[in-house]
Amino acid sequence: MGKILVQGGVPLHGRIRVKGSKNASLPIIAAAMLTDEQVVIEDVPDLLDVRTMINVLRSLGVEASYNPHTETVKVCARRVKYSQPPPQLIQQMRASFLVLGPMLSRKKQVRLTLPGGCAIGARPVDLHLKGLTALGARFTIDQGLIVAETEGLRGGYIYLDYPSVGATENIIMAAAAAPGATTLENAATEPEIVDLANFINSMGGRISGAGTSSIRIEGVEEFHGTRYTVIPDRIEAGTLLLAGAITGGEITVENVVPEHLKSLLAKLRETGALVEEIGSSTLRAGSIGRTAAVDLKTLPYPGFPTDLQPQFMALLCTSRGTSMVTETVFENRFQHVSELVRMGARIQIDGNHAIIQGQPYLTGAPVRAADLRAAAALLLAALGARGVTEISGAVHLWRGYSGLEERLQKVGARIQVVSAPDCQKREQRSC
Image (cartoon, rainbow, N blue to C red; front, top):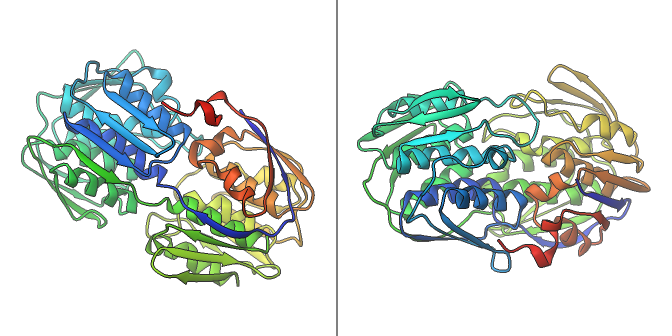
């Protein structure tokens, strides 16, 4: 599962460039199956989840490769031979379920096991299925598999009961190739949705309204190849900015879209942290002394992102005063709390609320990460703590952050990788 050691208490100073967005790359790789021609996707981060998605496409007979040196994915789906990826691949991560939409367009029958990934909540797929049913798909359960069939997708009207990112993405991909017009209401508005729509449009798609709650898709018969660059990862950018604040240092983060981080920047400023926008794509954050307690509530974009809640909580553990964090997106996203308590944090859980009494400092301890963002939170807490922290379950970190420990070392972090999966070793990173 991977293990790292962190010697905390060292203020971090320097510049770090943000990688391409994990949460944009994965649906874009899946959407590359909509065309028979070659697609080249640039700025794709070197992550375990990226390799899993590539392996899902390969299991379907699609030509797919990743070059970690150029951070480029190439996909050619001239032949999609199979309609059922191996269950063990789908169960490795939630995003693997995103092949459903494009596969329905290509094969008209798909067999998928329920997806896996971080255990942060139920995250049912009912919204995916209801939306695709409105486009002409039929779903049954056969021996534990979801069987999707269609005689041909067609445009339709869809209203999502909740603005699910994954459901919005699957529906967009299916509707892009369905004859007629589709209107999707109460859609997710995250920047990753906009990036997916822009990618499909670069292949000849006709999608408008992405980034708003009402998206219109005009289905097209044929898509062409394209070369496309993924947006920067706003969650990685936020994690790095928090690293500057939690260590009492100052980190300059390059290759960012400040507009994507407005809620985080507002909360950081509220704590008294130093936050500065430098030009159109660079941010700087740090702190002098302890930050102040604040309350925050996670919400769908443009609200405060649930994917940054654990990391921000790590900062609040040593902020002056009492903070309250309210989690409204995932019902099980406080798995990092018990581990922060091991480090000396004072946190009480009341339903979906966490009440944090800020302490002067945290102390290094053996902790275990249960999911991706919990791993990032524990790393931040360890960087700001006194003494050495041993983090087990670090494999979760490598699912979502490319070479993060090495980049943090360059700005002063004292991190040692004790054990890592073979696929995380640099010399074995090509796909």
